[in-house]
Length: 163
Image (cartoon, rainbow, N blue to C red; front, top):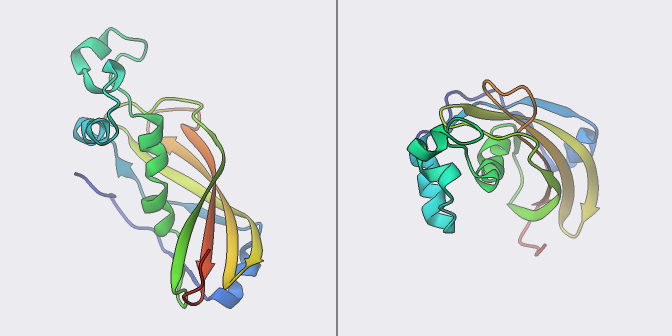
């Protein structure tokens, strides 16, 4: 499976500086190619084999003229995308605490590449560290509108504390 095409400069901070990131736009991520193979692997992993995703011949006469990525496939790229934008150098553990609002305003056509812009919308103390709310606005090459907008909640913990 193809990986990212390039890596942007990562924001490197310590736990003590996480509160300073509230309201900060971390910038644009590197791009991740969306191939038919990636789409089919995701379909196999999730059991979602809807033709719009996995049948290129049928999809040619469908509403988008090609197969499109599952919305949740796009969302699943959040981990790879965000890990290239922020590194907390003295963090012992990062916990994916969940998501708040998620929307898929436009489809991701096969053959495009996906990236995102990240903004740290809030930083709050939590047991053992800090909880960050990060808004990711995903785009796909050749698509005018965002393809996904999601608020991801992450907990950065200094030690072995539980979330």
